[in-house]
Length: 358
Image 1 (cartoon, rainbow, N blue to C red):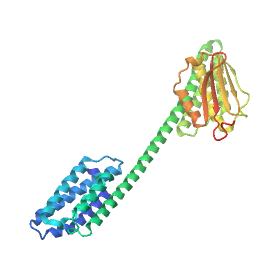
Image 2 (image 1 turned 45 degrees about the vertical axis):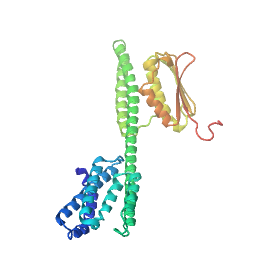
Image 3 (image 1 turned 60 degrees about the vertical axis):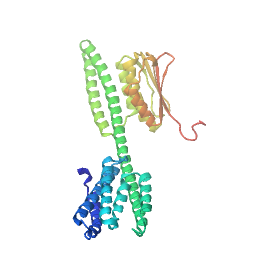
Image 4 (image 1 turned 120 degrees about the vertical axis):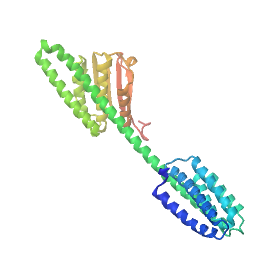
């Protein structure tokens, strides 16, 4: 219950109690003044509690009717009827409290007809102009209820947007770290195996391979740190050079483009990711002897003569690469080469009114 005791609720509760004072002054002239005053206070406290629970739920975006609020509303209404039976129409103002609580506890489909019926049932002779003021109170509380709901929905939408941003950032980081470590560890493994074979036959070449392993490890560590900070960009020319070194270390004959100048500048980074993931998969899974990479202004093509598409299962790497391509307006396709190997194509997707004509 402590979560319902907030500053706004407390201020409104004090306001409600202040409106109760005229009723308490009136019941002094009736029989059983103390009992009547206690009943009036209990009635008002029940209605305030019902209102506070309902309005707090609305602020949290909870639209369903709260049974505790309904229970307090029923008890408060029952006590109000007892007070009216004891002191008569001098306590008719309790109808304002009931109408206000009903407007917040129930949706407008219930509260609006209830207020209208109450205004009709109460004889005008007993409460001049009371019908109009009761309906006005109900409508004002209903408008306040809708404003609270609208504000709560905006907050919920903001929270959902923040959660979506966090998830997107988490996915971005997972893709980046997978791509960095997958490529780098594959290269390190191959060079370590090569150094192990050459350590006795050709110590100088083995030392060169070990030095490259150290350089690749330091570079991967720096890239992981940069990826976590969210400021990493890949160089297409740099990835082509890495791919050549990786393929050669695996004993795969590589054919590379001579330049990246013809590739559109805005596509170079995503194509660099395609080259990195594509060549890593060639080394890991294809069993290929040859691999070629070709570039155009709007596409990159990676082909090998390995096991082909039938043996390829789309894991986290390819899924992450596909998402990255989609986010950059690039379509990623897997196919089979004439040699039966795997063909990976990344093509910029043309959008807008000219797409069908070109």
